[in-house]
Image 1 (cartoon, rainbow, N blue to C red):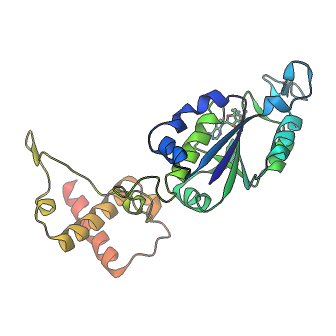
Image 2: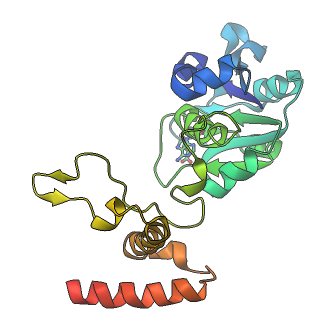
Image 3: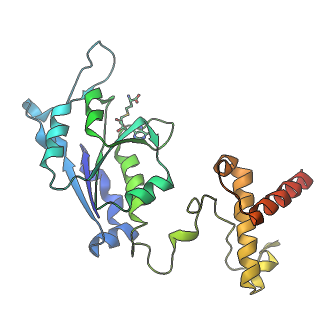
Length: 242
Ligand code: SAH
């Protein structure tokens, strides 16, 4: 996969050079192409922003350098603009994007974009209901979530198949040694070696965690017969615990 990023701060992207994503780049599994759209400004001092029409605080990014930078790309693929007003990013979007050959992210800064810049995008995406100083951290989060799903990035030992959100549920509780830490014991079932029972327990716990922490994720989910029964048990269990 080839990922283009239009940014005024290409130096911010070093986190993508380390660990699994860094190795993935070295192995040629994906490529990051950082483009500083300041280079495409035709104004004195390479300015890229100006004061807002109608008045108000802050500076607004102009469309010309961003459009020129986009047009300079060999393969732009899907164009994604980062903005608080966008659709909230989620795992399903990461899965969809991981099937693309090319992606292009545009990072804003200052007060944000001249409204006409949104017309250059296929998607406008936010990472949550809060405001950051720039689109660089959102872009890095979205690249990380997307690229880790590419074949060979996580390696054989880790699988993105059984984690939170991958099947619409949050992850079940995980444990490693010791089996008893200051009296906090690992559930017996996990030590039993009975894989059928362990799978069932994990499914139940994933459903329980989701029901207790993020019930909104269960809305619209088609529950299997088994899950319907599990949910009844979970509700009875949590009423007892109260
Ligand atoms: N004035 C704008 C905010 C600008 S913040 C507003 O009120 O909506 C500057 C830039 O940071 C934005 O252009 C965007 O690229 C990025 N940004 C800030 N918060 C973000 C978020 N929650 N998700 C995605 N991008 C964000």
